Image 1 (spheres, helix red, strand yellow):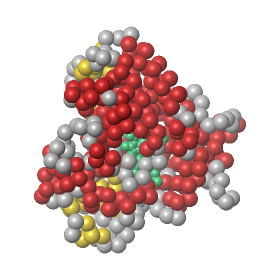
Image 2 (image 1 turned 90 degrees about the vertical axis):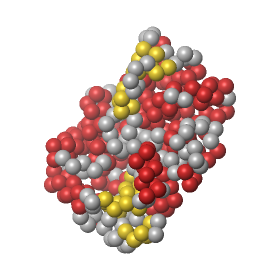
Image 3 (image 1 turned 30 degrees about the vertical axis):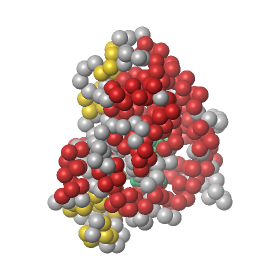
Image 4 (image 1 turned 90 degrees about the horizontal axis):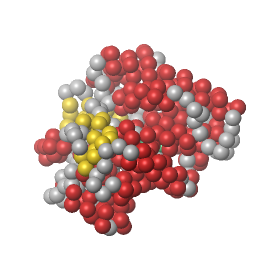
Length: 384
Ligand code: HEM
């Protein structure tokens, strides 16, 4: 997508698409709109393909994320986010490092048994999936089914034009919500020292999550917890293996590891875009966007903007000082709640992988997962 984004930034940075949405591609415009007080409520969209999609989804009767904080405006957003943030704390995330390291090392032990593996199947997917499952305290359950359903549900974060896919997304959402309700019911009878138990009893000045709000926040955490970080690990490994000088730098100077994660996030954004809806006319890059517009903020394009990252923005440079200006976790009131967890998982997984296997190399064709938004490798064959 990157050459196309570069042309958009140059020629038409505030683009009105004939299908009835707008696309912002420059870093400044993307950063501004995420920090401004626009809406995330799709029902405010005035027309076009997005409106049709929302109406169809509403008719299909299953929009499980609708009550999640990702889709809510204040005052709901503020209270949902603060209730979840109360139990999903930076301290809890930081305390996970030994557990994350143990999970990564166990995966690497298995990988070491083979000469050639697919890193998505053996590390990039199972790690974040195990971490969020353990954090929430999910009972043993049908993980393969949950994986399949989450994979469908995240397609709702894209503009989908065909009815069959919309129906499949709605069905997956309903099934995931039903499974989550069962898990919550089980957890009420088996409370433990975990996030789900804490969410069930989370309280702020007497305020609590309703049953359906609880389901929506749990689905959001579960899905956001693994469908994104898989791409950070996958994209990061591909970028490193395609840039051997950068791999050598990471191995020779471990102090660069933290900055390297920012650069992986910048170079190939695990979440390529997010959206806002205008409640009143909004001006971006000197153009007026009308009320009820669905505006896509192209995080992936902002992250390659020459205006911020210089003329070599298309190069991977893990010691790039301005990498921290990347917008992959969004910005403003909806800034990713799981950013610290994703950074921790990415740093440990990629760091220990390259340390453990000095001869690590791509071994076959990398394929992509076919998603416009949560984009990353589908198949990542490496020789260890
Ligand atoms: C929100 C990206 C990992 C939980 C967001 C947003 C982005 C994002 C761009 C903001 C969307 C917007 O402004 O409209 C990412 C990326 C990740 C990642 C790139 C991995 C590399 C995680 C993890 C969790 C998580 C591991 C939780 C376990 C959330 C939640 C929100 C969110 C709860 C909603 C925040 C709100 O609406 O206030 N994420 N995320 N994310 N993320 Fe992440």
